[in-house]
Length: 297
Length: 297
Image (cartoon, rainbow over all chains, first blue to last red; front, top):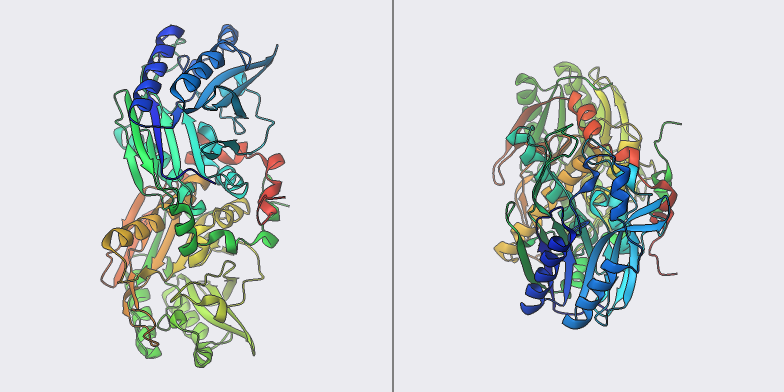
């Protein structure tokens, strides 16, 4: 059963080439969030490094670590010393030539409560993730913690209602998205606004259609493209928390680091699902074709 | 292949106890929309009557008609004379004791292009639809027309991403929702705003997650509850059209009848899906549990 009420924190920061600078920003954010009462803190996607997927470069695999490994141990130490649950996002080296984009959940005692390997992997100009990450093979399984069952998903998963639904059906009490998404400066202002608005809207809809709070933590700052093949990414921050009707509870700025702390009324999940009982009415007898790539047979 | 560009119309009006008054409002709206260039017009849910599901009353079955029947013939005549495609919503009598909430699509020659029987049926205080409507048995099949393949869904279907996805996977080029939803006047203003915002957000997300335009047509006006068991429904209108990034293209008022006409750039579906290729990345190998009621085994 979910802890109620539950104060949560999100650490939104910029990333630079030096790993220790990024780690310091993460740890500073964790400590600020804990000081403000957060018992669960969500970090942004791949918070230990710049978003290295802007190019396909075999050298970047040097950034990956095993789990457990140095980064997970440093984060475990923070979870233990602050007595909080941390949802982190690491570049996992599982074996030579086998890497994942992996979320790791640390318990308040520093143990690893569970991991989630990003299931949906994007690949488009400046987001060449299919080069780096093998799609996850752990499925859509919430991670049980002392604060409730966490439906951890990662970035591109945001656009797939299937992922949010599967987590909900497995008893998740929160959906959490570490993410790294931003603007291409060559796009028009209108296109940029449409994209960010779509990103917010799609995730709020997961909250609404499943009667579950959603947390999304995104990085900020401009990161140039090392290949100069395009103009780099202006990460749009805007980390947010919404409740089980999709109502925005807290939202960070688009252009500055920020520690966002807010308190969730977890009893609202049950209340909202009484007035909007979508789980009651799903037509599971008519959903078989969701397992098809396309219905063109 | 979808017609491009495609001018669409939505007829939002109030309903009263006399069927001929409602039909006149519908026909007037169809004619206005056609005069403004609409080639496809979406009507609101159960436009021929008040929203009779506020109580469970066997007398109300008198409102139902066969398809084809008197209402469908009058609408077919409008489609033919105006040369437009019409998406209508009727209370279908299929057999004694067997009724559906059925959308009917009329071709420009007045023929019936296809029907869709509402698959997800709500039932909550003042929306007692499970008493009246047997859940649809036609599945989620787009209806082919001279203007493209129409993914017609109805009201409560709005809250189920599965329905929108299945229509998209079957080649739908538009999602269309006749709907009847409103406020309980005894709710707080904040709760009312959360509900309407959730309704808009969930449907915009179907557009976003599927790269497809969405049309939603809702009624306006206050309809008292005949049983006095509760305070009636203030239907919130707000019919809208959004594009394949969820961007709002047109939106009607919440409190007045309105004919909403706008033009869709149907080539944007292909363009948007090139930058957001979600259909490419669905993890159909890991979606089996979507066919379960709950993952508690």
